[in-house]
Image 1 (cartoon, helix red, strand yellow):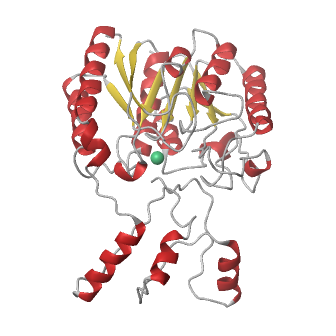
Image 2 (image 1 turned 120 degrees about the horizontal axis):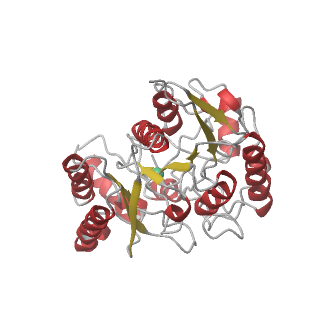
Length: 373
Ligand SMILES: [Zn+2]
């Protein structure tokens, strides 16, 4: 039997906004060679990430047409900029919604977002984008999204969208995988084979990103618990938003979403289990990773060098490593010799290095590779 053709619109709008930075993210910040992107260029924009996985699996299905709606890629400021301006929001979202209207109807929409966007005058940007998309495509279409686990999302997003898929690991090894899942489940939903029934539970915990490595307990245990549920029950997907703390937004912090195939009671049961498991670990989540003050860390490094325990790695995890020079200042102050500084975001200093003809110079690319990975 030939299956009816399916049309899926694809939108991208992503940022991890530190709302405490002084420089807003402006309309111009999203304009550079390749951005905004439309059509095939959008579909090819991030081949190893969510977008690549989504497009790969969507195209494994017969009769699926993907429509790349003109979308801004990651701003050229990377993650080093604050609030998305009202003008940038209105400009890009307005354009996306107009094009969506003009080129419809669609059976499905894929929103490639991050989850920690903060936009002036828009309390929940990703949920608002989903709401506006829903107004255009109607209740019969399905909306699926992929997220970074550093997203700040509450119940609002899945009021408007049907499905969300969030990476489980930090660093985010599974972006491509979540894109694949989003495509497969979206196509199934459109064909009547998956009926999204979900639950969202907020967990009142905020942690600094430096604590969130999933390679060790207690975070690793939570990931394992989610994977176990997904293995035990077919068609279950669990999203754990760790949250992004450097944002003054109403939905900041941890959130669990559970997605099932028409099993609302199961979604609630798993959601409660995950939320309780997280809450039981609340002390460890905040404190298990030992973080040294800068002066103490440099002093420890000096001791280690003196005792021959090299190499020593000083990880300045401000979540925007290299954007600040506090560690460098302390290294100079304590006279810690033979230190290689690998990240430095200082335009004057890097220009001087470049001008000196230093070998191995490489410009930092604004390709969506984010420090939070
Ligand atoms: Zn992240």
